[in-house]
Picture 1 (cartoon, rainbow, N blue to C red):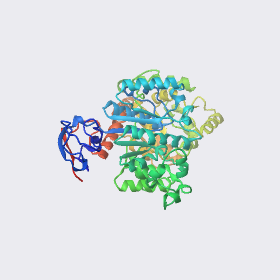
Picture 2 (picture 1 turned 30 degrees about the vertical axis):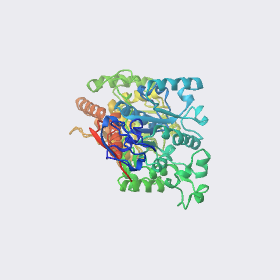
Picture 3 (picture 1 turned 90 degrees about the horizontal axis):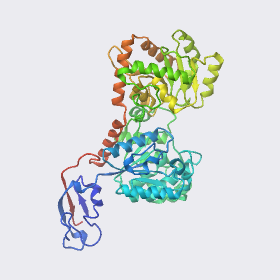
Picture 4 (picture 1 turned 120 degrees about the vertical axis):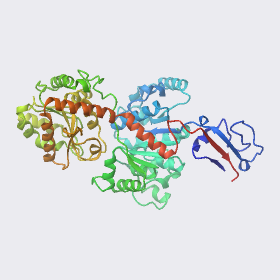
Amino acid sequence: MVGETATAGQAVARLDSDVKWASGPIYSIRNDQPCGRSNAALCLIETPVPVSKFPRPRILVVTPEITYLPEGMGNLAQRMSAKAGGLADVSASLVKALHDLGADVHVALSNYRRMFDLDAASVLAHEYEKVSRTLPEQRIHLAEDRVFYHRSTVYGAENHLISLAFQREVINHTIPQVRPDLIHCNDWMTGLIPAVAKRHGIPSLFTVHNIHTEHRTLAQIEDRGIDAADFWQHLYYRQQPHGYDESRGHNPVDLLTSGIFAATHVNTVSPTFLTEVVNGGHHFIPDAIRNELRAKYHGGHASGILNAPDAVFDPLTDPCLSHHYGSADLVEGKRANKLAFQAQAGLKLDPDAPLFFWPSRLDPVQKGCQLLTDILYRLVADHAGSGLQIAIVASGAFHPHFQRIVAQHGLQDRVAVRDFNESLSHLGYAASDFIFMPSSFEPCGLPQMIAPKYGSLTIAHDTGGLHDTVEQLDAANGTGNGFLFNVFDSAGLRWAIEQALSFFHQPADVRERQLARIMEESRRRFNHQATAAAYIARYEAMLGRAVTGPAEATVKVSSVNG
């Protein structure tokens, strides 16, 4: 039997060149001498070993999306961009922060050759060769399957096939190759992997970004090359399973709930959203997901870690702005960008007009855009004297509704409705005085963290990630960064808008002082370093040892007769 002192952990198993755990002689770590017995079970070694001998814990991040990877991870890194939503940005920022801090981080993602510009096999082979020369070992692990190769988007009609092919490669190849100390999985497309990790005694963190799941039977899973019989008992099923054979063909596995069920620890991307789900909020949450999150939460194995916006969202450097600015020259900078935005959006040129900006997709189920259509005409008419303007730079189901209201009332120079455009959206943050985030629920949200960096204040429904990041502005006491309403209806939104306009009409020096404070506070508060630090702290709590910092001076390693 092999035992180690507390902080040695799985690191010992990797010292293959220093100690031989296999059958035959057991060797001292320090002097590489045989201990005198050929039977490992009868051998005893107790040797102080400098911790420098032990590698830092190896973290494997498994993600279906990524925006970029750090250059230091190899020549393939700058080709990696598979983005469908906020998960891509979060994955990229976490991996970069871990890598920059010296963590032993590996990434598994699908090989979307078309998106990665890796269509030719010869190019792919050449790039892998360069990676192997640059790094002591490969850290970017691309899952290979033709279902990935020619896709132009991360998700599509074959989501379940993509998910199973991806997980097959991670389970069968990446995990055995990397031999991670901890696996960090994300969303339903990685929902089987915590069960595999549990089967093999590897701690796993499962991050829930989106409340969406898929169901597949064990037979369907195995048909894609995954040996589910090896870990079937760690999965979550639609009905109570009574055995492998009984469940295999007719009792579907819930992929998201399985990830929650099997993981060592679960985190959502908002502390408040987690407590809302646990306490019975949001009727659309499936009972299975709610109950498993509740069980993890009450067992002390669930928490919330806020996402953070990408570093490109910085008014000092943002390439999409017409004029760069900071908290010291925000008045001039915002006026210049407002004029540039108004010209591009087709609004009346007026740097003194209060400008409200809608940055999120036009989804009435979550984002609350119907609240704004209910009051749009009356709001603009009531504030015609101040020249109030509204700009919508977003796509989604409610886009035609906004267009009809604008056309019906002839509001084209006061209300702009444009399809989403990355550059125009960036400019909108810099130009606007306020942004709308009246979500009915919000698992996290990023616009409300981006806007205050640019000196634009958020009008938000007080829920989920919005509650975690937006506080009611109190100019007299110099606190808060936005305007919240508690009741999800158009009257509540209108009340918050009036609060915002009351602040807009405060003396210029009052507004400037508050906006400068909010910009500086947001810069320090909403960044990848803060988010990565929270994940690193979670990794270290799960592993019981440092992931990036210095370890203890020495540990003892012992082999004793069982």
